[in-house]
Length: 451
Image 1 (cartoon, one colour):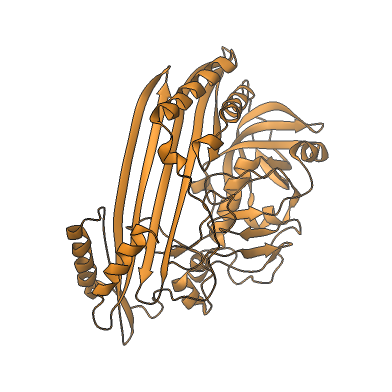
Image 2 (cartoon, rainbow, N blue to C red):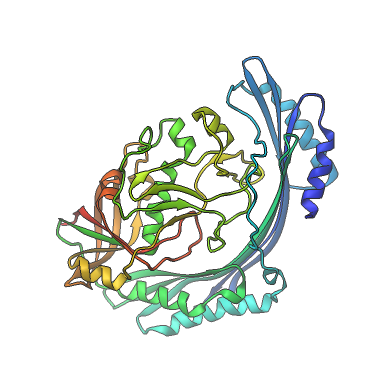
């Protein structure tokens, strides 16, 4: 039993009368190192802990919930947080759908997501990784003019959730990351490229992958031009595809659906995508960096099939959105730390891999645009209407090969059309930080606006 869980259990003894209490405790350690011009420009290592409390009073017209939080776990802070949450109940609006989660009988997956070596690896070794990464990129190609930043970071996080309704859960995870941004120049043009390696622990990081990634992405964009406007196939590489899947996942949130803020609303059972599209949210898959045994309300996470062979099968729900929709939670509550309240969302999206690698997809596409980066996603994508119009940099695809680099272009369509026009799904799955894994995807009929 974790110490946080023991502490949370003891705090439940303070329940008064008919009130319901939910207690969320967290603790963690983070390290960040930035190397610049052969020296450590920034180093920070910090620990944090905190408590979030929700108190619910039920009555005629609905329940009221008071919340409070504190960034410390000393006795004074904890008891003051409990007092404030109780006090805040009387200021809350009544809501017939608000409720705390109750155990639903789904067993939690046994996951090992925390690697203690994140804490035991000497700081000197972590610093050496950042310095070596910067040096490797700087010396990797004569066209690299500058390494804007070379970073090492890691974390260990623990959390416990208990409630007077019978919830009792704890979970932990860790992560380690190398990232670097390189600037390449040919004397006339400057281009940037970003490289990444991610793992559960420092020993799993691949410095060469991060360095080569940044060098390749920067140098191959040199001399990029604005292309003519056209309609063609757009091939999204794994990182940009992961961004696309995360956007789609947001529209599959039960919270967005019940609030009328999703283009998928009222479409269960409909064919919404190509038969090649098989999307699931599976936080129990340990390959996901956001995998978890429990969700933000303490219910067991589970594998949820969302779109099967192009047909919309399900949404993801937390307790509140499920009650509004007249269904049950799918163990999909997300929580933004001690100060946040649970809300429904996808945690670990994964598209079933296809049969083709990236080179084969490019060959089969023949002509199109290879999308290396997306810009203006937050302003250019409307999850309610599905409108999609974002800036892109990348390369032309000619005769099935990557050709000249292009920039200052916009790709436009709708998410509804893009899902239906999916024509190739890669087998090159990359497990990335964030809510979605990525792989090469090709979508036909995309309008490209250039010169």
